[in-house]
Length: 130
Image (cartoon, rainbow, N blue to C red; front, side, top):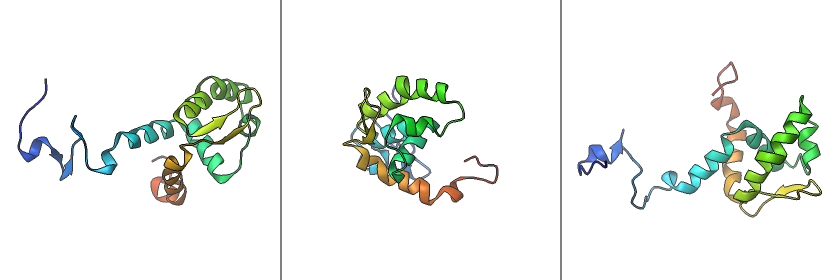
């Protein structure tokens, strides 16, 4: 059941517009941003994208070698994270050769990666959690 109230309380929360089914003019409420956050919400995908942004990885092996549990990481990468990032266009992944490169949509997520890198200390409390 949709609330059809037309007063400002139904369209705003703390002065910010709430998402609606109608076109949203605020770029921060764009569905593309939701997709970026979905990809970044997993620590393994976030780590992979950060490493790729830094130029520290070129292959699956580069990621697996950084792990304390390589067998588990390899399974997760090959069966979940790499396919998901490749389907979203953030990476180009050669399943046969294992190479990983920036995909055609990497530029759209790069500003978020750079923001996270440059503000890491402010985003984390002393225990290491956001």
